[in-house]
Length: 316
Image 1 (cartoon, rainbow, N blue to C red):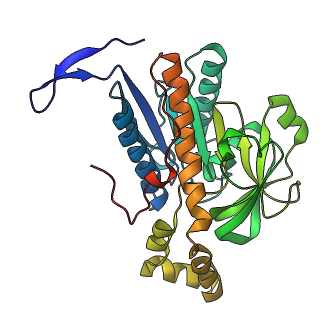
Image 2: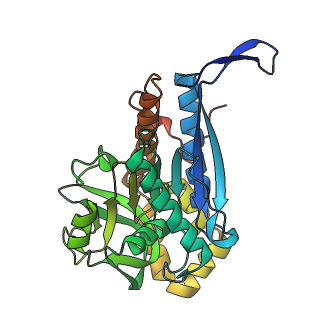
Image 3: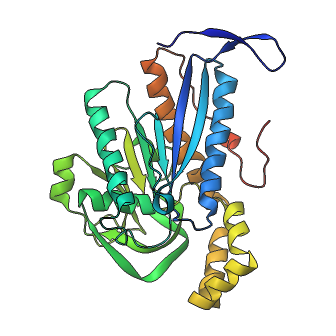
């Protein structure tokens, strides 16, 4: 375990420096495009940081952001927690590109580390990142949808998903925000079994391979979802009522599709539990595994109402 050190804080008062700094890497997969998802991820991580510091001054958090697809920035394995975002475009467009090769190498390195070490690394993939991981392990078909999936959609747990930590606290039929042209279908059950991966959810009301896969547990430390758990009502409305974005959607998909998108977001309760459970609990589980390894006090259950939406300010 790391030792304590005393230092003078900004007020020149003797204080204890943290025994451990948990390093979080946010992998921006937006390829340079504007996206509110990264801001929401940062907001969740920053608020979690505040809660950690309120609970235990022995632990601090460092957050760094990497632009993977447009700048070829890939973090090394010195981070403890990795959150890989959604992004525009096809997951097939980056075939053989350096950014894809290095992204896949990072996943391999994290898997190798976790196989041989007790101080585990934790990874959460969202939307485009979910598709990239399916592509890497060749465990399903990545196809273009006939109609863009856009709005708040129902999702259903598999039998494995009903008891998996990722979805604990959500109903067997829950909701997530989707905004994509691509999907994962026809999961390869044989390869999933060979790797020890488990499908946790499908879109709609189906529990079979005719529906798109929306959640996978790769290992106890590595998980990913097709939808956007960082999305919440106010952030979505902020983006999609912007005149430029509104006109773009109407011109591309029509007024009816735009109206359906906005209507699907109006019930805040459909997204609120997903927003306040999936990523915050991933962070809590990851932190507690790390704190347990370093013999530091664990975090208790998180107050769900503590995680703010965009209309609520972050605590000082």
